[in-house]
Image 1: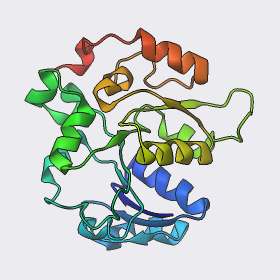
Image 2: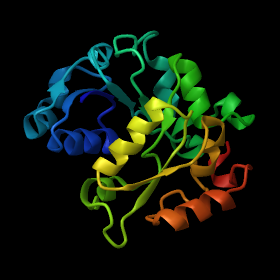
Image 3: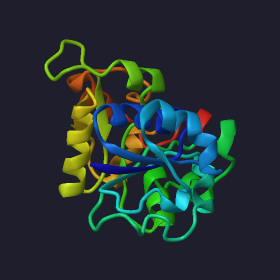
Length: 219
């Protein structure tokens, strides 16, 4: 599959490595010159490109940048993706730690709905709650005892199905976490966030989430 990744930090860089290992054709970009990704490209075989080129011809796109930087992405930056290509966003809102105040999110809009609004396209929330080293190192075959489960939130349909399958291919049990409007159940500070739970524990943690954002994750 042709995959475009915008963002080459801990999660974006890890997904570049893992997806390239699995044989996917990966194009990766950061906010700077592609030459700054020369080492990652040489290591993985991925192609480093400008952010404006990452989605060109992509069958799936991943956006993995700080929440505060989403509005800085150029309008139509994903327009080159193939029709119907899933757009995964891995972002988290850290108002005190990094992002500053985002009024809409403080007022109750989910992080992912805010990202979708700025990107101008539906998104699927995934990979936001797993420690990057575990994403890199702890994927296992289906049926392996202790296999980590990852929640995925977004609209039902082919795009979400593709993402569920990709999570499984990466070595994790996918758990359907409902619609994008329900993605608050996996935001920072919720019971599932940052945990290496299995399927049943993940579902239980999602069900136990409270809508009110914890104090550490409010401005």
